[in-house]
Length: 454
Image: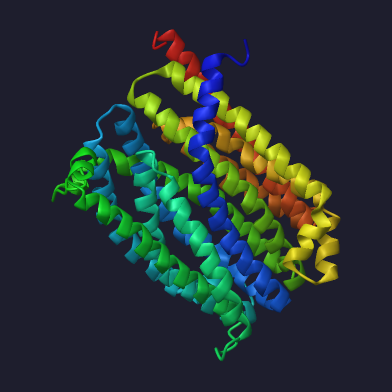
């Protein structure tokens, strides 16, 4: 049977785990989209400024998040092996690690104007986007503290805690954002800088919320002992070697994925403010679908890591199959919604009819990119869960930093396809990743069978 009882059970397990994780990720993505909507209705130029700043910032905060991903995977493996006390030890190692990461990436972001000049942006974009990037960069330590904490909670099957916080943070952002952008209630009119400031405030709120919850766990003797929250050692650097190695691979993959988007965003900036604004709206739509599928991938990764911790190859394969079913259904639903309501959706982001017309003419290409951008995530979940990062990392670098960027540049400027060429190039990169990593997963599955792991 294609849908066996065990497969159905695994599908339900992933769905239950993915619901709060997806809600958290989507709510986090919606926070950025709300910023884009408010700024987009405020001024098209300001939308381009914050869009470019976001493109750079997405790399600056997702690289360290990728480096911390080992906390989620390794802790999930220990949880699956019923070594619960190791989960808290891994969390504490992540706390120490994120201090170094925060310092490095915040310093890079503070010098964002220099980075934008090196990327060939005009002085107007450099000045305004650089100011916004500076505000975003100050929030990096808060982002990493929240992510490390939520990874720990997800690994011990408490993903709903982060979900509650992110939903509340969205409500706070909706209240603060327009006040600072438009200068309401006596506050100065800050435009896109006000939106960035609102995001910073919300991220501080999230850190306070989640640390209070974990502090309560630490004060509970039973929970403290069960999850090893008091296990803190001076040898954390050497103890966390394996965890960091997993993170290195995930971080390089993140650089390849988001770095390629940032470079292509830079290409879009060369096409002018109007095309850049259209690309910003497209990337926000793509980000929502990516967030949904990435969160599903996280759930698949956790369940696969649990199975890997028990050395159960059949469960890993079953997790991959269940994940593929869920992922395909989610992408289909999202694409149908975007296709049938694209004009209304684009209108949420901007009143500029020329920008809406540009996007409406490219809607089929946008859907193609969304499909091929999300498909690889269904493969990366089980690969990450079993700790297989070296080969997939190499494949991601080839697909995104090599194939994707080259295709975008050649189609966009070599063939003079402009924005259409950039979107098609993005899709080609995603398709390459899916084929390479899909082949890797098939190879590992067959190897497990040959070795009698099943």
